[in-house]
Length: 159
View 1 (tube, rainbow, N blue to C red):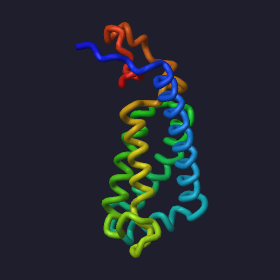
View 2 (tube, rainbow, N blue to C red; view 1 turned 180 degrees about the vertical axis):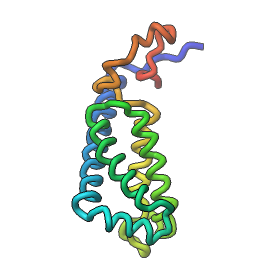
View 3 (cartoon, rainbow, N blue to C red; view 1 turned 60 degrees about the horizontal axis):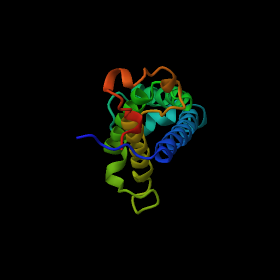
C-alpha cells in the first residue's frame, strides 16, 4: 500500500523547522559549553559532578564541554547531525539520571534545579536524531538522490 506524501508546503515547513531547531540548539549548546568552560570553570563543573557521585567526574566534565561546544558548531552547520543528536540524548539522559531526577521536574520547584530544561533538550535532540538536519545543511549537501535507493520515497518527506 502506497502512502500519500504530505503537501509540498508541509514538506517545506518541515525543513525550515529543522533548520531553526538545529541552529537554536547549536547556539544554546555553544553558550552553555563555553560558560561551563570559561564562565564557571572546569573545577566548578567537576566539583558539581563529584557532589552527585558521578563516576569519572573529570572526564565527564571535559566530555560534556567538548560535546556542547564542538557539537553545537556541528549543529549550526548541520554536519553529522544524527551522531551529535545521539550523543546529546545520551548526555542529557545521564544528566537527568545522575544529577536532576531526585529534584523533580521544575527548575523553580521545591527541589530547585529540576530536569525540565534537560528533558526539553533531550526531546529536541530526539527530533534531530529522528529527522536529521533537513535539506538546508551540510548533511543535506552530501545526501544521495533518494530515488536511487528507495524507489522514489524521500525519507525527509515522510509523513
